[in-house]
Image (cartoon, rainbow, N blue to C red; front, side):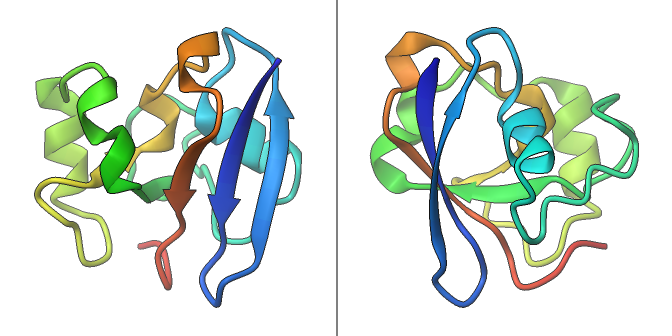
Length: 107
């Protein structure tokens, strides 16, 4: 288990132990994080699990693949550096304490 910190829009902070190998999206969805909709179930076919990764963690993640980049074009107010789809971030021990911010809304 790896602790991921989800900050919902409005500031509610949720620290969730997510099983390694799942995605940040699955951890948020399965624990009722407000704003992680995950309409496509993690297939990287929508942008409803969009988040902003805390600046301290951006460079610790694998680079964005082209498919994820395409989907981020549909996200609510994407940030060129910090926006990621949580379905594309696999949880692993090196991410212990990573902070992700949920946007105001998903589209």
